[in-house]
Amino acid sequence: MSNVYLNGQFMPLEEARVPVMDRGFIFGDGVYEVIPVYAHQPLGLERHLARLDRTCAGVRIKNPYTLLEWRDLLSRLIANEPAKDQSLYIHITRGVAPRDHAFPANVSPTVFAMAKPMPPVPAAWLTQGVKAITHADFRWLKCDLKTTALLANILLRQLAVDAGATECLLLRDGFLTEGAASNTLVVVDGLLLAPPRNHLLLPGITYDLVLELATEKGVPFAERPVSEAELRRASEVMMTSSTREIVPITLLDHVAVGCGQPGPVFKHLLALYQELKPS
Ligand SMILES: Cc1ncc(COP(=O)(O)O)c(C=O)c1O
Image (cartoon, rainbow, N blue to C red; front, side, top):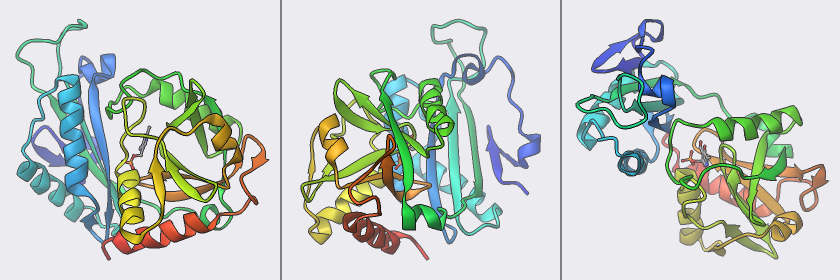
């Protein structure tokens, strides 16, 4: 099955190879995107490709393809993957060069992309919610860029796994930023609160879509800093991401969130989000 693309060619995953001197391998010098696909149609494709473009500009890698070229390449990957619901992964590195921190001259980026089946969110997550822990956000100050150098996120996510939790919510200087691999929304005093889009968190496409739905459907919300105290007294906490959509967090650091069950704002937003999905 040719569900992988590497530097101009479609091939099965087992055949995809990159040289060890690729700067993605040596330095984690690259960027990526993850795009959800429902019924063989991507959701939010333009937004994901626009974010890819912003990330490329932010790390000074030239986006190797135009919007049209990306569309064509990705639609071929989607068609080659039998599963209806998929996640598309795009990965671009600065290319292959002798090891030196400074940018190499005249190097072509390595471009890898693949489509793979996207399993549904476990039903119990939606009916009972999931556990999360909190931790100090020890990542860098360019968290708005979707870069492949994810070691800090990996360490934080593993802390959650070690604690038997699904996500690790991050606190910087007394304020909530996001999860190790998701954005976070909370409900405080009946108001949906979203930490502001700045350099401290990834501007999630799911977060954008959810807040746009909230605007359209008259769900009151504010995009503003959320203090740790607000997070701890929130009646609802939820995480958003392209592959997990919206998931309620009902236990935070061993303490029940609100009444310990998925709340009404989560249920409303999840129902609205389902309507966006191509079918
Ligand atoms: C750190 C981080 N924040 C937020 C998100 C959610 O972004 P999106 O909704 O675009 O998937 C992700 C997704 O992987 C992430 O890794």
